Image (cartoon, rainbow, N blue to C red; front, side):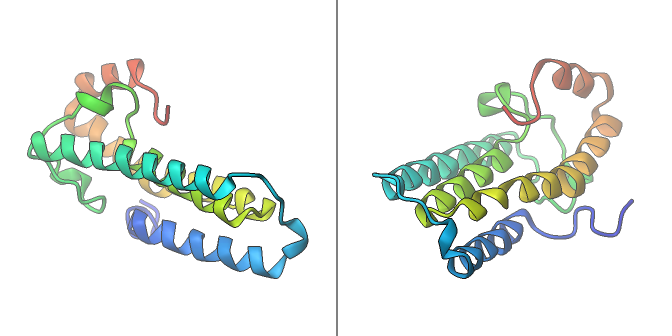
Amino acid sequence: MNSLELKVPPPLQVLIIGAVMYGVSRIFPALQFSLIGSAWLGGILTIAGLGIGIAGVTEFKKAQTTVNPHVPQNSTNLVTSGIYQYTRNPMYVGLVLILLGWALYLSNLLAFALIPIFINYISHFQIQPEERVMAKKFGDKYRAYVARVRRWI
């Protein structure tokens, strides 16, 4: 297992990327753009992201399984209901929407360019290790779930 796998909490990853997005928007003001309603749209995306993330947490709580991203091996149930019928990672989808909302609010092109960095990092160091654990723990049931539900959307 890679030394960064399952180490940095996803909310902290969002805060770090969000802070960098803010920084680059100030350092590179020439990359600012003007879009009427971008702050409102950013707010809507942020609220949608929070809602999707909360829906994911709620399904985990209903199933009485861990929401701690550091210990996927403590999962007691494979959750495939609710929001998990549409995405295997609604909490991470929610975090991406929050970052998209923040980028729109900042209205800076370089801020948007940082979102794929977050997606790649969380895919490699969080999602893939979680998926390995789930496949080992839940076997064919998990593989059937993976075959019918996409990782993101």
